[in-house]
Every structure is written in C-alpha cells, then in structure tokens.
Image 1 (cartoon, helix red, strand yellow):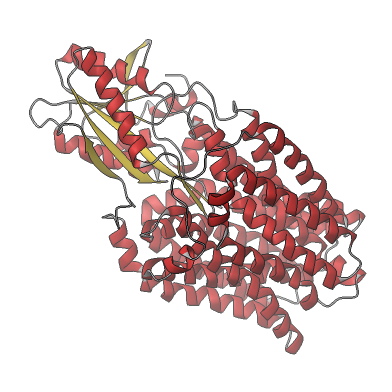
Image 2: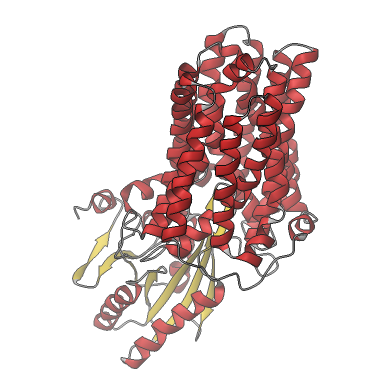
Length: 578
C-alpha cells in the first residue's frame, strides 16, 4: 500500500493526529474499508464447508466484488463531480452497510456472491473520494491528514485478518455483520461531522478514464498492474485452503502478512526506490513474487510451506503496491484523478478475473496449477513493464501535457538572482508558512542577501489514489502573497513553485540542485509537520536536502535563532533534541 505524500517543509499548528472530527470520521471509515479483503480471507474454508460450496464457487466472492469495483471506477469521477465528494462518500458507505448486512444474512453462496457485487460498488464510491475528503477537511495543512490516512490504511490491512479470524471463529456470518455495524457507525459520523465540500473546478466525462488508456504509458502500467493483481488475488483467494487452518489461525497468518505489507510499503519501498530507481526495484520485486508463488505451487501439499510463503509475500506486495502507483502517476499525461480511475479499472479487473480462472483450473487439474499460473503472470509483468521503461525514465526528467510529473521549479514574479548569493526559504501549504518566510527574511537582511521563496507543491499519492492538495494557481497565489508581504516591508525577494509527485526526498534533492545553480548562501527550512516516524518512513525533504546541498542548511523558526543542520544533527532534530 503506499506511503509518500504530503508537505515538504515548514511547521503546522496542528499535529498529525490533531485533526477535525470530519477527518477522524473518514479515517475510521478508511480503517474498516481497508479491512475489506483481509476480513473475509480467514472464513473462506468455513464458508465452503458451511454452504457446501467448492473453492471455485467461494472464489466468486472476490470476482464479483472486484469486477464491479473495476467497472465502477470508470464512473466515480463523473459521479463525484456531479453530486459532490461528501454525497459520493456517504452513498458509498450506505451501499457497503446494506450489502454487507445482506451478505451476512444470506443462506446461499450465490446470494453472498451477488451481495458482494453490491459491496464492490460502494467500495469504489468510497475509495475514490475518501482521500480527497480527508485532505479537504484537514486543518493546519494537509501533511498531518495524509499521515492519518496512511495510518488508517496500515491499521486496516494489518487488523482486518485478525478481526475476521476472531469473528469467523464464532460464525462465518460474523465478518459480514461486523463490517455492516462498523460502517454504519462511520456513516453516522460522516453525516454528522463532514461539512459540504466544494465540487471540482472541472467535471470529468464518464468516458475519460477509458480515453486515457489510449496513452501508451498509462496503458502499459495498467496492464502490468492487471498481471500483478492476477497473481496477487490468486494467492489471496486460494492460499487459505492448502493451509488447513481454522478461521482463528488463518486470521493470525494473514495478520502477519498484513503487517509486512504495511511495513514494506511505508518504510522500505521509498528507500529502495531512492537507492535503485522505480523500474529496477519493480523488476526485482515481480521476479521475487514469481518465486514465492512457485514455492506455494510446489509446496501446496505442505501447509507449513504455504504459510511461510504467504507471509513472506507481504514484503513484496507492500513494495509493489507503493511503486506501481508511483510509476502510473509518473507516466500519466492526464489529470491524476482520471489516471487513478483508469489504473484502478485495469487493476481491479485483473484481481476479479483471477479467482474465477483459478477456480476453473483447480477444478479441472489440481490446486497447484493456479499458483503456477500466478507465478507466470508475475513474470509476464516484467517484460510488459520493460516495454514502458523508456517512458518511465523520460517521465522522471520532463513534464507531459502541462502536468508536472517530476520535481520542477517554476518562477513566480521576477527571475531568480544570479548575482549576490541568495538565501532560499522552502515552505509548504500550511498556516505558519508566512512566519517561516519572515524569519528567513530577517536572516537575509542580516547577511545582506536577496531572498528567494520556494513554495513546495506536492500531490498526495496513496495506494491507487492521487490527489492534488493544491492546484498550480493556488501555489502561485501563495508565493505571490509572500512576495507582496515582503515588498510591503521593503524586502526584495523572488519566488518559485517546486512541484513534485509524492516523493519528498526527490523534491529535497531538486531544491539542492537549484541552490547549487544559484550559488545560494543558505537554504532555510521550517520544522517538518510530519513527525519523526513519517519522515523515517518515506524519506525526509530536509534530510535529502541536507545531504545533497553544497551550502549551509538552516532550520528557522519564528521565535528562535536559526540552527545549522548537518547529517550528524538531523537525528537529534527528528528526536526534538536539537
């Protein structure tokens, strides 16, 4: 699942968990939503036994849910544009409540499969708008809200199988009714606490995601995601059977799996990407998944082998989920919500078709064959990705159709100074940015240097969702406001907008290169609002800037003397002791 988003520099008054009730209401719903698949996985054998169904029939629980989700992804952008983000979110929650309860009350496998399809519609409406609603409802900058969203994602992935196992040990109906009750609570909280939100400036056509697939880069990454999800959902849908465990034990196994998914998506994927690049890591990761699936296939008769392989696969899946979304956003030449819908369509189609095909194969041959096919789809994804390697590499160096895809700087106002070495101050979209800029202005005045204000604008990218937390006009307006305020006090300054898609460290390195080009005297930053854990997780803007810069990097605060930052002082800064 992914984790690398948010503001890059500067303090906020509100910490990550000091958010309005609206943010907490949606975050709670996110936890339950992210539990979705894992909650059901531990009860698959119990369902088959209780309802006298074959594994291939039970697998349709995944197929109906994911195929409907895939198709619905094509229209959710249009729906949200017409009815608003809050109404879309509330509709999705209400649909999940109704169909989860109906699935729990059903007495046949066909009934549950049908109700899971309705659940998939609600899921698409919810996941397409939840991140946007959280960002729009956040106070004091969006950085803390993104951290909260990512926490909800990790908690849902890790806890879902555990709760599913506990409820499933009582009855196979337990997880379905559990979701219905918890989502009903989230629905009431959303209605009560989330205010009406403004609609998008520009509405999208229901056909826009399909038209977007005409772009080779997006189609290539989408097909790669389809193949990857084919293997992933084959494992998720069929691995519980050869383990020969009860619901409680299966819940513990998939909890271990979920913990690795969350840990590797948050802590390791960004660092591997920074060290080796997106495409090389994905090549190695897909090959690793193919090996794991082949081990499951070869050891399908030995439950312990299957258990260990499934848990280990969580590391590869966590990395892949994060970097695949990043790759999609890098190569996509269309608006990010449209790219998310197109990518989600292909991704969920692969996940939906795989369990059905695996069931037919298992019925016709034996249980190892679907896993061998899953291993083959992971391997096939490698040459598909290679077909888009050049596009991915180029996307890391330029922009497409006006949409920035890598860290780039756009001047605002007059051109930057190329004479006297300037002081550069980097700030994000938060309520204390002005105070940080003013503190840097005092430093520039005291050293007789011109000042350059760099406003960091980043897209939030989590799982298959991407949200622009501010558009280009808003970012330019923020810089202009800083420049106008400084001019009123007789401070000469220029401005830049630094735009990046989700990668804090890349944005920091881009600013370091810019500072070197200008021969900057000093680069100043405010204290990051994201906290030490989030910075360690996905790479800190300040850390990357400090390591890459050829000039001094100072931490400025409105009421304190500037503090020099070095590689040795950064750990203490993150711990709050410098």
